[in-house]
Image (cartoon, rainbow, N blue to C red):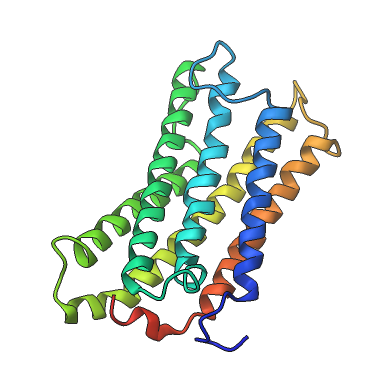
Length: 233
């Protein structure tokens, strides 16, 4: 499909399908294999399970939809303002969902007497959600309220878009590290809760691959968007 023809590209469709698949798989993992979700429970694992679900649905799935909103909504409305508001709102919801996911893992650590922020996954995760919040706030102030001058907005757009894609890439990397870290814990001695070749291990690894492919599809879909659509945000 040619660039700028106002349609929804093939990579955008692929990204939507992968987003649904990733969401379904992480829910199956945390509910079917790990026992369910709860913010309050004697079984502290149920508190932890909220973390991977919300961190996937928030910064990754909703974040992807926010990035793709300029492509996906083009047939619904040609209004730049509609696409801008959808973009901002989706990122805002993604950030809020991610914040609850971060809260859940800190709550789990506190109640299970586990140290905080000791792994590469946690370091990159905190950096990513912090950058996500700063980029969203800067965009809100620049493009919505109090809103910068047209010249300033035009100069900021490419940097905002580039930083947004970088943050999305960091979110994908953080998720992959998280899947690896959790699976390693579950497989480690002395408990060996998960077999290396069992159904749960295969599901987690396959989910991680889907998340990786989702990141690639979003980047490819974004690369096909005519850059002139961003010049007057």
